[in-house]
Amino acid sequence: MGKKCRASLETAHSALKSEMYNEALELFGAFSSKCKTKDAKEAAAIGKAEAFNGLEQYSDAIVEADKALKITKDKSLNGHFQKALAQNKSGDIEGSKTSLERVMALTENNQNISERASNYALIAALYERQLNDIGTAQEYLNKAKQLDPKNINVLIQEGTMYSTIKDFNRAFQIYDSAQVLDPNNLELATARVNSRLRMLEFKYGTTKAQELRNKMTVDEKSLICADLNTSKALGLNDMNKDLFLALICNQ
Image (cartoon, rainbow, N blue to C red; front, side, top):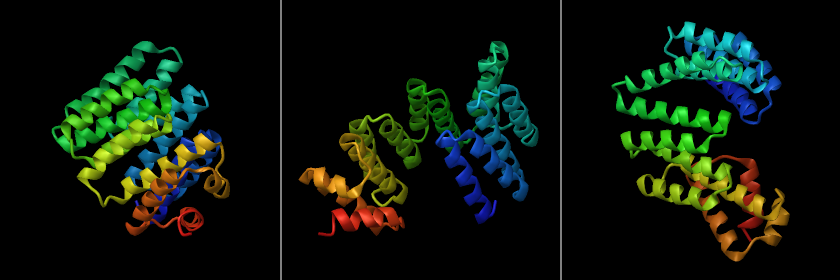
């Protein structure tokens, strides 16, 4: 996919993550009308399937999942997962089991260790986001880490999962472990900043920088400023974070 298609896909995925399913369907529809590569067609079908699952329109979800499977000749991991979810929710338990078995077969038969680890991480993300099943998500993340222990992306995903459920101590323990492996990773630095902000906003009940500045402790200011400065030094370009940095840290 080209740069414009990737940006369009990212916008559609953001709507999914925010559970704005009708908007996501429109965005994936616009994406699929402009982006015609094989991977774009698969991504559009999977995105629509997830949106329909979120809307509890399970027959439509199965139709879109089947499109992804047809495009990939039955090799779309996410296609099988979305179909399994729709089947389960619509009462087709046996069909759901068969689809999930296909997910595992595609993963465990993959001889490329790095790809298999990434597949386990994908399964973990799906369990976390769509089923809110942190325990099962962690099991698959553990499999990914066992296969590819130096994969920073898996650790970032794990830390962010715990940040999302507001287990911030565990999140930063994981981020710290990742930072030892790759101290100059921009994605990790960005995840740390986002989680630090999430933690402060949760603690103080506001997203306004001015109010946070008046409520934060000296230690909290020191930590968020350190994370913000690191991310900026590594290349993060985010106007809102720049404004926060100027208001809180550059005094």
